[in-house]
Length: 238
Image 1 (cartoon, helix red, strand yellow):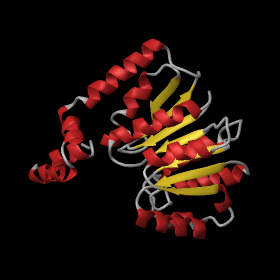
Image 2: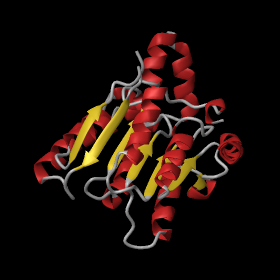
Image 3: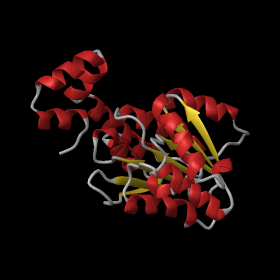
Image 4: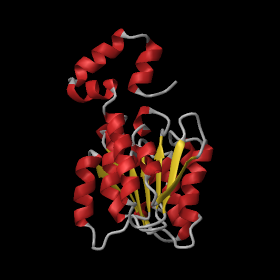
C-alpha cells in the first residue's frame, strides 16, 4: 500500500532512511522529520521502520495545508497498525520546532532527524541549530536535496564541524546527506571554520538579493531569465 502513496525519494534513499532506524543497536526512540509531503517517501518508510523495531515515535512537520491533509489520509490508509507511532505537526519548522522542544519531557533527545522542508537554505541551518543540542552522540542527521539550493548551506556547515562524521550518499541526482554525531560539541576551531563558510554562503549576491527583495520581485526577475539559469538560482540544480 505504501508504494501507492506519492513520495519524493527513490528506493536507495528510502533504504538509507530505513537503515538509520533499523541498523542501530540502540533503537531510536525519537525521530523528527521536516517536510512530509504526501507521506509516501520518507514518512511512511521511517514509520514502518519504527514499527518493525516495535519502538520509537515519529514527529513529522509539514507547512502546506492541502498537502498536510492529504498526507494524514495517506498515512491512516497505508499504515493503520503504525499510525500510533506518528504525530503530525502543521506549520513552519522555525515556529513548530521551538514549541515542540518546549513541550517535551526534559531532558529531550532526538535520535534521528531528517530535514527536507522548503527550498530556502536558511531553513535547514535553523532546523539544525535547534535540533543539534538535542541529538546525542551516535545520533543521526539526514537531509534531502543536498546538491540543490536547499542544502547548499547545511552540507558545508556540518561537514566542517569535527564532532560530526558526514558524507554525501550519492543515492540520486539531488543526493542525500548523512551525518552521525561523534562527540557532544565541536572544537572552537572547527566551529569557527563552519561559521566562516556559512557567512561566505550568505554573502553570495543571489542570496543577498533573496534576503532583501520581496518574494514577488524575486519571482518576477527569475521569470525574465533563461530557464536553465533561473533554475540554477532558485533550486541550485544543474
